[in-house]
Image 1 (cartoon, rainbow, N blue to C red):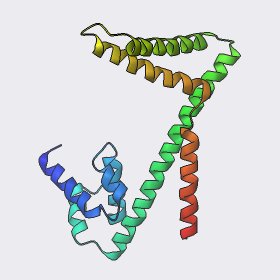
Image 2 (image 1 turned 90 degrees about the horizontal axis):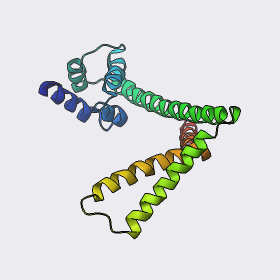
Image 3 (image 1 turned 30 degrees about the vertical axis):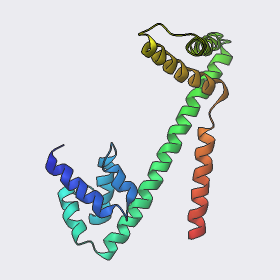
Image 4 (image 1 turned 180 degrees about the vertical axis):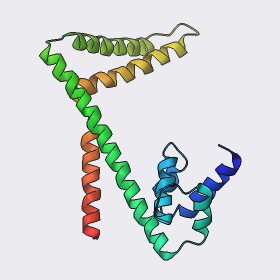
Length: 183
């Protein structure tokens, strides 16, 4: 990205930060294209406006355009929340499918691998805590422990599920309740 484009995007972010904070935040990351499209629709009524045109329009924003910007922010937040819920649903479905396959095929391999991963985690953790590690190998043991900790978390989530989906559902329900109460 050129320096001029970075400056333009920075000016846009500054101009909308208080009115549309999520869109402003998205301008600095992988959702920048979606954020620019949302701004274009809010200000000009259609997609395709350049960042320079948006930057210029923000300098003389009408009341209707400001209201459309607030509406675009709410729609953008809703789209982000829906995407998060969908991602969580997909991950939960993947785990459920894997568990169903394991049960249907009477497959013991995931259980055996899960047990080995958890056992390996505790063996490495125990070795690091109770023994003095060979000089020069502390980094390797730390990397191994980190990898095993990540795999252990995946094993636990596979067999027992994750509370992440439940927490996200509760959060979204509370946001929906607040929106309805405000209207």
